[in-house]
Length: 197
Ligand code: GAR
Image (cartoon, rainbow, N blue to C red; front, side, top):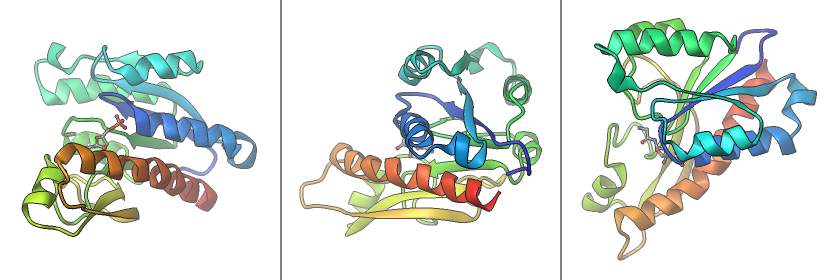
């Protein structure tokens, strides 16, 4: 987080429930008063993302940038960076943003870019984390908040939550159990970063 600037920009691709948990915690925990921090914008690569509707209704600036409209990953990331930088972010939060980011993007936000991943990293990087945990016979699963580096789903771990894998779990039932924990640890990890300044 850069010294004075505590603007938070959140990137989503879908329902945005983690984003909503962060916005609500910012309000109930008075981040603006305590840290001078606010959620300045929510940006999606999908215009139809449910989370955009919710964010807009909260009075938050929203934008959609369709990645399929760009010729290359680099072109999309360049447009995304300019959409983000207009809000002068001290922190960029990936909350179910389902795009692999270019090294240039990651470098640009180095030290102010965080992600939540639905597994106990370093186990199960990538996709289909819940099904893979079930298939491996894991007794526990969970989620990880981490800093973003150019290596996918790596970077310093900031917080984690563990849930049991129950007999008969499907990827869906396990995902739902993990998601309730995500809503607790993501706001908590961000608040810890804000506290550090
Ligand atoms: C969350 O479970 C998040 O951990 C996951 O997508 C979901 C988004 O839900 N992220 C990834 O898989 C990133 N690789 P949400 O839109 O309701 O916050």
